[in-house]
Length: 68
Image 1 (cartoon, rainbow, N blue to C red):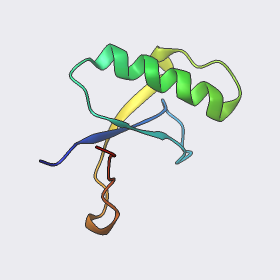
Image 2: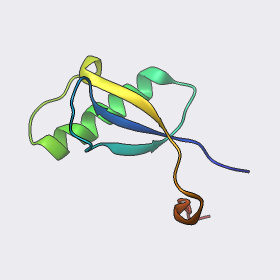
Image 3: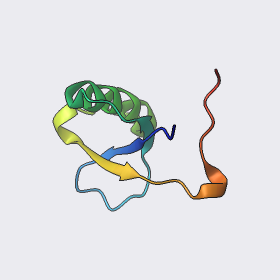
Image 4: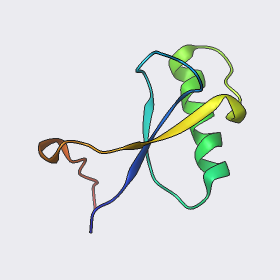
């Protein structure tokens, strides 16, 4: 089973920095978690409405392995 991921990044930002999160059916939770983590990355408060979620497709050789 392949796990799917999204990249949470600042909406409208041209910067490639973002946070890779496991995909979830709860979009609001993903936006909230992305905002929390991006706040740490940018050292300033980020609101969920400032977060954009994009699909993330890691190269085959770089598949993320999750601990069991």
